[in-house]
Amino acid sequence: MFFGSEQNPKGPGWRRLRKVEKDLSGTRVHFLAPPMRLPLRGRPDDLLETQPDSFDLDASDIYIPYAPWDPDNPEKDIPGDPKTYSATIWFSGWNFTGRPILDRDSIGDLVLKLTVLEARNLPINASLFQRGDLKDLAQSFFINEQDLGSYHRGHSEGNDPHDLTDFLGLNREQWPDYLGPINSQWLERNGSEWLYFEVQPLWDGSDEFYWMSPIGHQRCLLALFMVKRRIHNAGNPYRRAMRSPLTNYRQLMENIMETITVELSEAAREEQRTVHNPEGEYPLLHCTEQLVKEAKHTLYMWSDKGYREKGKDPRGDHRAPKEAVAAFIDERIQPRPLPGNLAIGPAYLKNSEINTAPDSSGQGPLSIEGQ
Image (cartoon, rainbow, N blue to C red):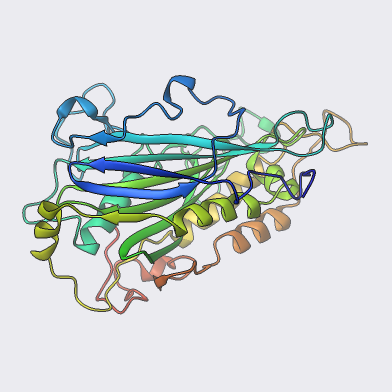
């Protein structure tokens, strides 16, 4: 492909690759990726590929709080808070381009932030080598109001400040920022198991793709891929999705993750040997029927943000048809098994199934914290 377009953005090629290697206290992580492709707007230059090749995971100074539940007091004891800390071990990305001149120098980018997460407040006898405990750590992201459980102040029809009508009992002050987890599944990559899930932004932010794999009782790798699309007259997630699909960004992500290999240190392997996961049991994350309904409403209400339809009164209603937004969400949440799939769940849990429905992996009753 010589030039890209909104519908077919051009990213880096897959012929010219370099090997990225990291030594994490004896655990070795390596994968292939294209050279960084600039510009990466809004990304801190001092973080782009400035990380060392080796880390002492016992050194406390490499960690910072990961989305602390109480930003003013990260050490505050909050029930359910795993007290997660993170160390960034690699941060890079790749620019995607469209039509020369018309689309300028970028229509989007894919960024990979590879971190080690350390959960310092797990329950007694818990281990991230236990699939259920790794799933619970991921679930905590969605309970945390400073992370994927965040929300924003919504608005009424016509932005009337005196219209206090609620939708589906949705608090005007608490419209969800994200729909997730979606497309949750367990994957095998070169001898390691990964918990995977996606997040759909509802009014702002990047499309996010999470890959998590344990490297210790309290530590795991998190490969977080973030897609930011920059499309003229498409200032909200729905309009961007309609104009420029995620396909090419996803393909680059999947190509990179097809090559990733994690070789545990002897100490980590010894920890892994002490944990037993029942064969065939893969606990999965789920979003709920209620959240899907709220997401459809939120995305619809913001579908005119940064968008004006040609030929319409600029002061008129420029939102998308409600049915079109709902159809987009219905399609977006459908399960899509990736290569190496070990288990995958339904699009969402119905409200009546929460805490009672058996997981599609075959395990017992599923309890979702915070729902």
